[in-house]
Length: 225
Image (cartoon, rainbow, N blue to C red; front, side, top):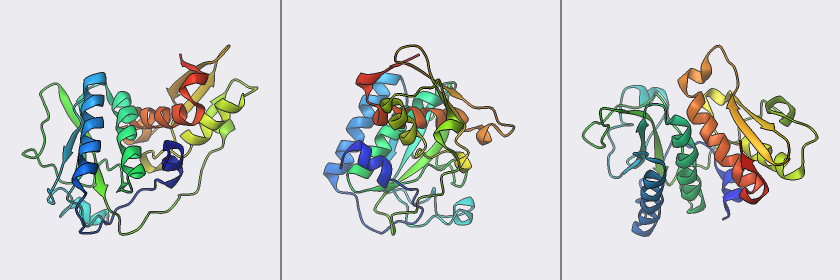
């Protein structure tokens, strides 16, 4: 499965089977997490065989079940956009390996003994990873290219990038991002205004959308502004 295919196949999954993730798939996820942490100064951590985070409290309200593996999305304060960008790369790798996932911002119980959050860092969210009891469903797309992009006329590569970004998971599906095409092939990505600010998740959502845009458009076709 290519990353473009993974973008289209990935849907949020909340219920998981009692089926262990193969060691070779764990190794591939861990390798990308380690590489991304080194490259961007992040502190993502893959936690395995830990069922408590989604076993009680708000997790039951969120209808989560069967989760014992997840990624703790940890970064320095102010690095949330980079965390979204690199974290979604890990999520898409998981999808390409036949695994399911879900970005979860609130409905879990913190497990400080299972991952490290340093003094200058914060835990942004958790991402369950495993074999889903289902493949999730595609939510109706609220916005169009014209809603989230500017700088017409749009070249084909830009359209493909925005189409991929519109498939990115965002907090309560608000899609608070904009892509602006400048002279030549320069693209600017920024948060869109909202009174709720995406429940505080707009920066990480922007990073996720940037990851999708880059895959859809092709790195060779543009430069980030």
